[in-house]
Amino acid sequence: MTNVLWLMIFWTMQVIAALSFKQGSLPDASRTLWFIIGNVFGASSIWFMMELYKTMNVNVAMGLAVGGAFLLSQLATALIFKSNLSLVQYIGLIAITGGMYAVSAGARTHP
Image 1 (cartoon, one colour):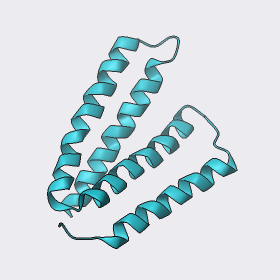
Image 2 (cartoon, rainbow, N blue to C red; image 1 turned 90 degrees about the vertical axis):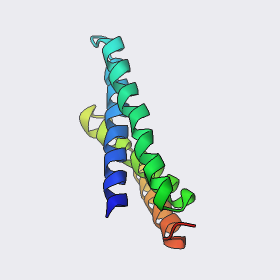
Image 3 (cartoon, rainbow, N blue to C red; image 1 turned 120 degrees about the vertical axis):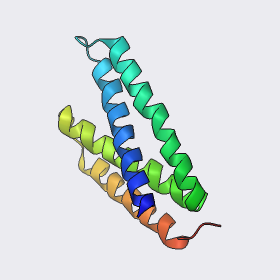
C-alpha cells in the first residue's frame, strides 16, 4: 500500500512540474516563478522514487514511476493546454501502459 502512495505522490509531483514548465513557456507567464515551481516539484519528487527503490525491484520501480509520470503528464498537458493527441499518440500511450504492466508482472518482490 505504501508503494502505491509513493507512486501516486511521485506522479502528481511530476505532472505539476511538467505543467509548471509549460506554463512558464507561455508569453505572458512569469518564467522565473514557473521555473522555480517546476524544479521544486520535479527535484523533490526524486525522494519518493528513492523510497520506491527501498522496497521494490529497481526496474519495476523505475518503469512504473517514469512510465506513469509520462502518461499522466501527456494527458494533463493535452487537457489543460488543449493539445490534441492523434490516434497514433493514443496508441503509444496504450503501448506504454502495456509496458508498465509487463515490467511489473515480471518481478513483484524486492531483490
